[in-house]
Image 1: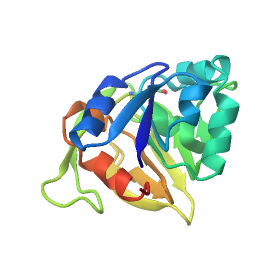
Image 2 (image 1 turned 135 degrees about the vertical axis):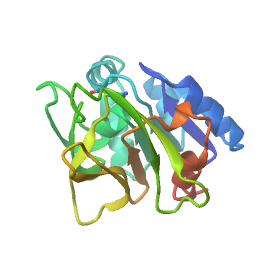
Image 3 (image 1 turned 30 degrees about the vertical axis):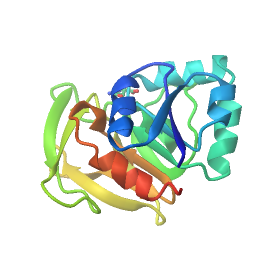
Amino acid sequence: PKTVGVLALQGDSRNHLSLLADLGVTGVPVRTPEQLEAVDALVLPGGESTAISLLLETSGMLGPLRARLAEGMPALGTCAGMILLAREVTDGRPDQHHLDALDIVVRRNAFGRQVDSFEADLDVRGIDGPPLHAVFIRAPIVENAGDGVEVLASVARADGAERPVVCREGPVMVAAFHPELTGDPRLHQLFLERAGD
Ligand code: GLN
């Protein structure tokens, strides 16, 4: 993509922009429908999904964003961004919007109070070299992924159950953690490989 937008309503957009710059891609913050119109792909960063959902509505971007996603705009959602892109959110606020961009059911804050945040080294399908170091902060998990969804990485929860934490369906990719915090651009690179020219 020529221009990759980073949704900058709330949450961590700056580090995403610098990772895109490291990859030689033009990244621009997106806060208005006009700015959304001008980008070829969009990163939805971590933060607080309920706040971002509300700001999508008040900024007038909710409808245009749904339309772009329905047209096949590539999107990368991380943490809160993954929650926003899901088909269904369990434990969401009743008025929280979900963009239905890929066929996953997501549970918010799913690793429990004892483990608000943790780090893990992940083997991600499609990423070569050493494992990807992943920082999870009040992270969601994927409770259910549809048949068309590729699961690229999983982690075991405290109860031993394996849960997907990186998924992809067509040009839409999601991760439950914060890939922008480690300076490692490989997840963004993997996203861009499917995001077209
Ligand atoms: N718990 C947050 C939410 O529900 C997501 C956390 C994050 O993005 N680090 O939106």
